[in-house]
Length: 128
Image (tube, rainbow, N blue to C red):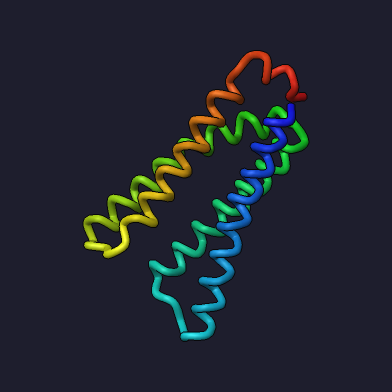
C-alpha cells in the first residue's frame, strides 16, 4: 500500500511540474508579448497534462479504483507524447536532444513501474 501512495505522490509531482511549466510559459508570453498559435497549444497541452496527472495522483494516494484505471490509460499516452516530441525535436534539428530523451526515459520508467505494480492482483484489492 505504501508503494501505491508513493506512486500517487510521484504522479502528483509529475502533474505539478507540468502546471508550473505552463504557468512559466504564460508569464513569459505576457512579459514578451503575444504568443504564437503553436505556443498557445503547447501551453494548453501542458495545462491539461498537469491537471489530469495531479487529479489522478490524488486519486492514487486515496487508493481510488478510477485513479488506477485512469493512470493505466494515461501513462502510455504520456510516453507516446514524449516520443512524438522527441521525434519532432530531432526532425527540427534541436540542439539539446538530451532533455527530450530524458523525458522519454523518465516517463517510460514511471509507466513500467505503474503497469507492473497497478496490474498486480494483490495490488488491485487495495483500490475501492
